[in-house]
Amino acid sequence: MNRQKLIEQIQAKKSCLCIGLDTDIHRIPSQFKSSSDPVFEFNKAIIDATHDLCVAYKPNIAFYESMGISGWKSLEKTLDYIPDDIFTIADAKRGDILNTSTMYAKTYFEYMDFDAVTVAPYMGKDSVTPFLEFTDKWVIVLGLTSNEGSADFQQLQLNSGEMLYEKVIKTVQQWGNPDNLMFVIGATRHEMLADIRSIAPDHFFLIPGVGAQGGDVEQVMLNGRNNDVGMLINSSRNIIYAGTGHDFQEMARSSALSIQHTMAGYIGM
Image 1: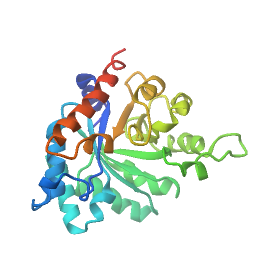
Image 2 (image 1 turned 180 degrees about the horizontal axis):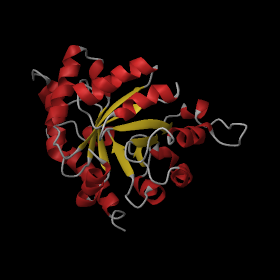
Image 3 (image 1 turned 90 degrees about the horizontal axis):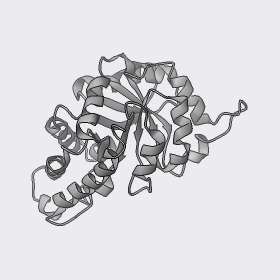
């Protein structure tokens, strides 16, 4: 999906919601346990309940590959079921030497046909650029993450006075452009969002951490948006596990709708 189509979806739905399909077979409602593919059937139900409220789905690859071949099959079926006008993100956090990254890129962009993949930039330019060679595909590079451990390295101050995450964001922008490159910026760092937006004014941000990790949608919308909105705000557990009984679909939709309503107030302003 190219940038213009993504922006059109955001404006049409008054939403920049991304729903994380971090599907744990041990947490899904019991009625799925007898299914031949409980993970896919649960994902299908979540997609049916929320697809008109979100512009992206983000399967976390670890939850699928941990189940071996059956998990990969569930992932493929889930990806095929997502409507074509919804942006898809492989949350894989890959990044390796040139020839290995090339194979990862082929996996997610050719074999599986995701729109985007998350990439770790620690190994430098040659670990990221293979992902940038595909038309209408996106690389989402880790910038400032929402986990507690991000302080260990990302927030180290360099001799230049910059934080390491600032240096990463400035450097990586030289490898791609706003049409194929996004950055992961944690929602729990909303006080830093305005500064990060000034560093990367035109790029989209994927913003995890809303909900279970404590991020606030309104603060993110206030501090992070640009003229194109320029954000995909992710919520995973707060939506897909909003309910655990037979009303789980209604609960998931209600949670997604609440977030979308907040977003709508800031889109088109």
